[in-house]
Length: 454
Image (cartoon, rainbow, N blue to C red; front, side, top):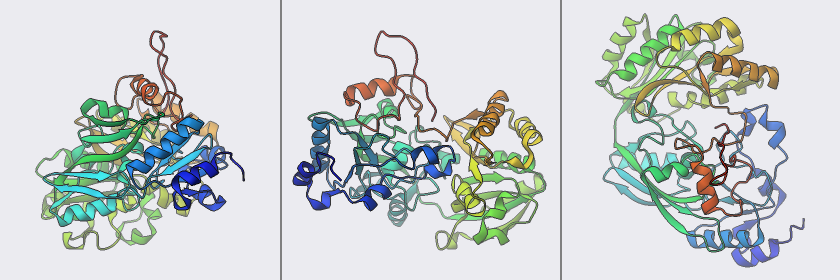
């Protein structure tokens, strides 16, 4: 393979700093885009020309400066646990794997300062040893990196209490620009919105400060209900109850729990279930509340067993999709925001229209302070046309869809429209950072609006 610049880069970073073999390039050009039958055929052949492995900011600067001078596209990856092709190089070039930048720099006093490649599972363990814990994390947290989560995720376990990434769960970031002499930026407050969920398009995040929560001893429960509507209403009431500390409130309809092979015996066949993590000592309060909605606790794991074996959170969020795919490769998923006021009617209409073609599970979260029934519905996939008919139905009935079957990033994240594209022009003047992922906003004075899907 001849790509023109490999020898010069090898001279710059050495044999251990650049991978050119086909196996490494294939493995490190992939993420979990195959969750989507729409994305899989479009992305399977996309491949980096080389993979750089910097272990310090100084090495990263050398690589970025070299790539800028040669106009080489750059795609950054953490652990590659994203689902939309965030880490897939659409135009070849370099993948920069930041997993070697994995030092915990400071931990304590309610915050952690870490390099981007620190695994969230490692940080959770270290934090709990010190009397703290992560506020929010994805279901992939044992593999996922802090940088990958901040730049590719949104929320997760803990969001029922602490909200999403934009809700004060990132305090500071160190970001490098893509220029001949990359600038080191220290970003805080609202400016962070241009870098959260940015797919590495506006700058490369190398260091983060995130807030921690005091360590809590968590028990886990499966609460069973004859009807999904009762399960979701119970979840809402529990999520809103400030007297019961919680990390996870995940209602789902049957037969979704039947896909959870390692723990299927914990569920009553035919019944909806709510998977919970609540503070030790709350079982009686949870039981009483469940009974108010016609439910009962079907299984409980004491706090002393937390993290000692597979946990309920390993079957929630998008791990629900993973377990379903293991049983039925014909399943895919959507990302949906139901109405806090009208979700029961929305559930009724969706089930009446699609029956078992669409299976619903929810995560009660706080988004911008508002308690919200977020959902990752499972869909028995028939065709791309049918999938978008389902999406259209959801949207016609007030359910917002965050399309997981496109790699195009919603410009601006939670900020103003066009903000992220304007930042990209400032930080990446040649458009080399993960090209093709961010829909361009018009330049100043051109008018119009940016668009895209997250």
